[in-house]
Length: 480
Image (tube, rainbow, N blue to C red; front, side, top):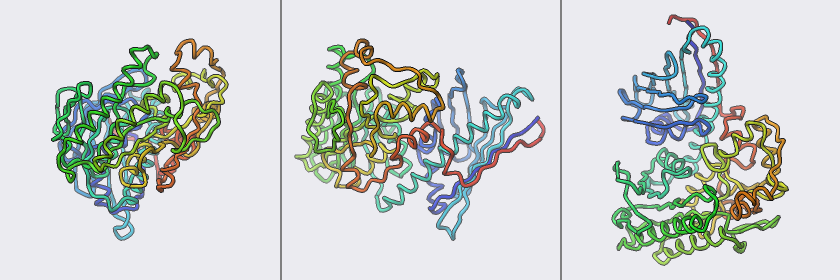
């Protein structure tokens, strides 16, 4: 039988102890998990020390498989070792090694994987090239995230560890934000509507205004990401009411709980309240910064009511950031996840005329923008969380098809979208909002992905991995 090996490494301009500590923190696995791969953590014990275990469900093709891993051979600041106990490979071992470089000012992360593909020579013939390609994609993505996260840590090096209270932590943005904050050394407390199951969870019921104010004592930052999905269903009167109430109720409940903390010293110093670029309405080619007036329509009404509730906490001396987010790009959910199956099948295309402006932001930049808004007092009031370069729907279509290497042969007529989705289509996919991140740029935020193609290649694992300093893949003959 053949054993396969894969070796790659990355140099990080931080001391080895700092880099190793990053990998030990909660959220490190989630931070490095590829967003294009369907992955579910079923159970986890311990961290990366000897005897710690991780059980995953992951999708390979159309099949969900179980993958159990045990950690071994832990040496602080030197290495840890993952061994497959049960999973899709006949054998799998992954050594994570860390070497100090440049007189302790830098660190090399060295990943060495050896594995054996099941089903003998047939499995090797069919699967070897696929596995190597997937590992190359995976580590290109992981190293890009790792390098950028350490650059972020260096940029904000004087920041003390803080406690963040997050509503909507189980959502698309909430999961990404939680993992990022944890690996940066902060503590995250999650608000949940179900029975509390962990020490880092707090029960709340925003529909009835229930949230114990004691949960906010000593919290530094509150981030409100709660709200019913805008495009999850056609907008019936009942659905519109649910969209509005979910945002107003959650914000009002958080503001009331902050107000109930009777010591200003123990209150949060900043409240990040999610909003959306939908507040600007359908504005054609007009360039919109934070000083632009609100537009018309249901979404603008929702955003205005949403933001009005958040502003109330300013009277308590809490800085409020009303984060007006554009289309968030990640294959893990949202608009891009819905589009991918169609475009991968080669039947995607522009919507209507294709001339509508789309203001977008990568998931990593949205997380980074939230963090920057917490730390920089220049981010106050309305803040547009969008990339610097909006694109038209036609431009987005052309870029996505180029990244996927698929044709765009169809066009969806606007009349068909309006017929199927009604007002929701008019105010979402057919609306035009050319929004700019004025305050983020003035406050010195450094975007990871300014251009759409760079963002798509990153989140889809389609880039030539620029972060890899060295990479080798080889098949080694051995015994089964």
